[in-house]
Image (cartoon, rainbow, N blue to C red; front, side, top):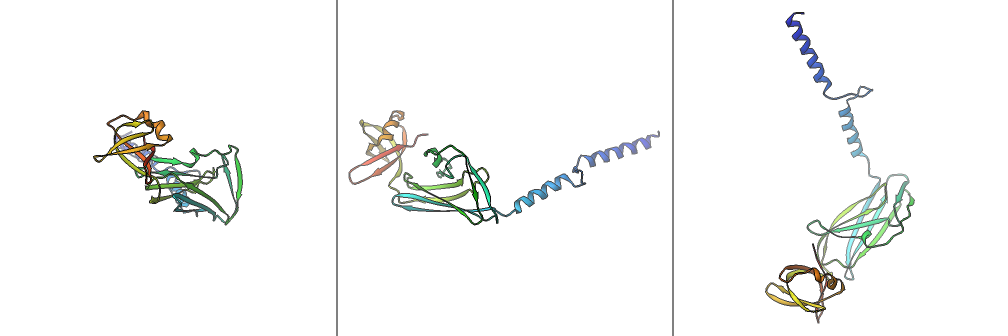
Length: 228
């Protein structure tokens, strides 16, 4: 075979190989890549089946969360829960660190429960958080159902709590139930509540500490130390 003809054959083989390494097709002749894009687009365009909402307010020195989820799918939905807890929440501080989670603090039945969530029906859950100190948070609330979580995230500023977060240099223990903290050059005495007393052995004199405390006309009391 002439050299020129061999070069033409090699060139054609290379072109066919390049075409084959591009978008693949399925049995219907559709381009797989394009089909995946179309499916993803259709999935993003699907209407939401539920509508979650939360209302958060401060009342009686506590933070109240009212969480609702409404079925707007146009038909019934089947929901299965891994326990007796239908909804849960997580509180994050300004740095994104988890402060607390409802399911970590409550005991619920472990039996799987199922329900039919009818169209236009609402699931309602209320939570009361009584130990948040004043500051900024993000609160995430969601269903625990396997089929639908209906997450909602909201920024919250707590201003009316009886708890305050502070920091200072731990200068020493005054007695079994009180310590002294240097707060910007001022020596301040704090009484210790039960949780703080249990944490005390992990503190070292001369180190900076952070803590949550309450105050009345008589004394300041540390509820707990914020340990790393």
